[in-house]
Picture 1: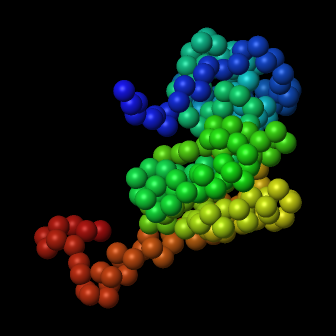
Picture 2: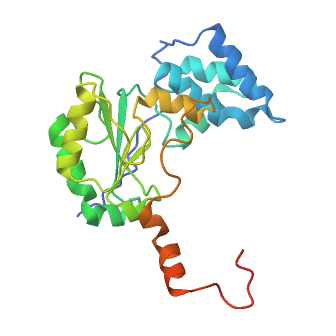
Picture 3: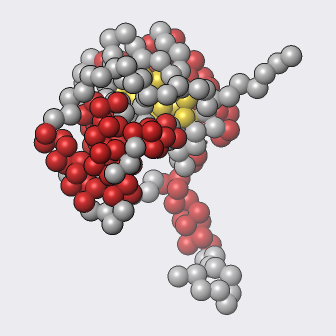
Length: 237
Ligand code: FES
């Protein structure tokens, strides 16, 4: 009997035995300020948990308890939120998060080959972290960048139209500490930095890179070239 392989493996619950945390008074004040911005304090939980990840590298039990206290929820409720979304880590991961899209289009365009290349290069499987703590690898679902397939994300920055050779070079550059830019412009720093941005902190780099690439705008270009317009009588503004 064969089994369909799921790419949503059971990643387990939050490791409540690991009580290590770098959250201090200033971090708690910032978390409290996040909750203060919402009429319903628990509405702030997603950015708050991203902030916990930026500081602790994961949704730590201490972070869960602090968030629960601030928003007036139970630890179980906060843990339930943290384990519902795949962007929240239950265990510490690497400095760089490598996400490779293996949804249909990216898969047929080479996503699976990218995964094999990166697994071999790093000596780990998907959902694992290298022993030096530098890279965590994950298969990810469609990132709405199918026109640039196959797509690889590094700390949620796009690396478009990847090939196995380009992926190996990218990993070499990151491991050597060389400056690496997303194919869309922004410099790639670390997963923790991205988590701080997802928590709502301004890193001053919002306008780096284009807002839309050529392939995404190809339909607009073709329409303009051929004089195509919307359906007559319909408001296309
Ligand atoms: S299928 Fe990979 S970005 Fe859409």
